[in-house]
Image (cartoon, rainbow, N blue to C red; front, side, top):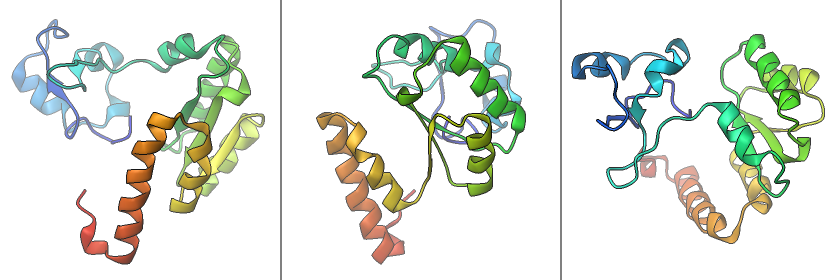
Length: 166
């Protein structure tokens, strides 16, 4: 998850909901994602009306990329919690994920340094606008089109902060 809460991305989808009332859903939107249990999170839709998407577990991503070295996964570590990094390391080994398939990113240098000590063979990047450009080469041509637009937007914001709309 990119955001701390589900407020910006979630909606209630009857296909996913088993026991979540609208009132409870509204409360859940502002709770920290890391404080919610997966049974609850799995009932929330973060897709579009025409393409609903349930929030997957990291294990599900690992199942998809395992055995396909051309598939890459970028993991953005945000919470300063050593147990999260240890759990990630355990999952990497448990699923036999090739270290070249993963890139760990973050904006907190101290947190990335901790992660690098625990997971030394995976590439780590400190995220800045210039480091996003260095990740560009790992994406497909279709993904690069999206990133070109993002970089153009970020460049514009760097010169004119009032252009930042999010």
